[in-house]
Length: 383
Image (cartoon, rainbow, N blue to C red; front, side, top):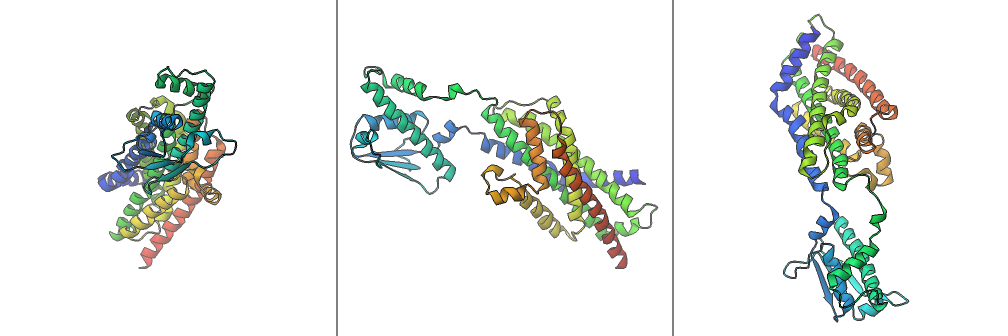
């Protein structure tokens, strides 16, 4: 009887194309969009900023400032609206070497420029000013020759100020974007199993299936457990498909190193626990939903809100401390943090401290879902 129930659930799930689209197409779309959005390097970002420099007089310092800002990629097209405007005051060059610093540059930006891009422009301006001062100092000290082409002079100055050569980076920047975005949207997609669970229970309530089940030689607990087992197998399959696409296919689209399938094996135990958490949590919500409208609003809305406070949509490290504390209580946060740790730390062992909260949460939600389902069936019988 239980085997027949599981087969029935599989038929229902795979006959609902909308649910399959929610489980597979939507998370893959999120993975693609967010990975592309986060894959830009700093030099690519500066190219999108159009810079306008207005000056009161023409001298070497001002020419060098323009050259160094252009060198890092800033566009300086006077025919296009300026994203950032720098107004240089009279005596700009002398003020650079004054004992007491005074403001000789007025920085303004378009309202359409994001705070992150504005901060990036300020950082590059600060670096460019330091290079200008060093450049002029080296010219005065005779370590640079004015007869040398400007590009070569700038190259020597940049070489002396480039301290990154003292640092070796363990991972490529683009790989970090993949590692951070893929686990988040994978977990987000897995938790949307709440919608097909809800839709199935609603249909069975409306067509009388749940009442007929009470006449079969199977308990409500066994029937509901078989149903959740079927959804768990679908969820686990979904998670594996998303992980393979996310870590082997999408990286190739953003010129980042990809993993082979064998490197994904250590994540399978955590995926298994995550899917159990998603299914049992979804079952708790689904047991209380009465119609399709509630399934979309409550089921989908809960997922989106949970993702927002869990650090999936906004990176946890830029959230206020209070929000970070709230995120620590979310099962989505536990799951995505565990996956990130596995891939970023190159660990191949699932930490008990990572899995234990998810296991406990799954057990609690599973017991609660069974109890709520029993109440749901009893209410239908009383009607």
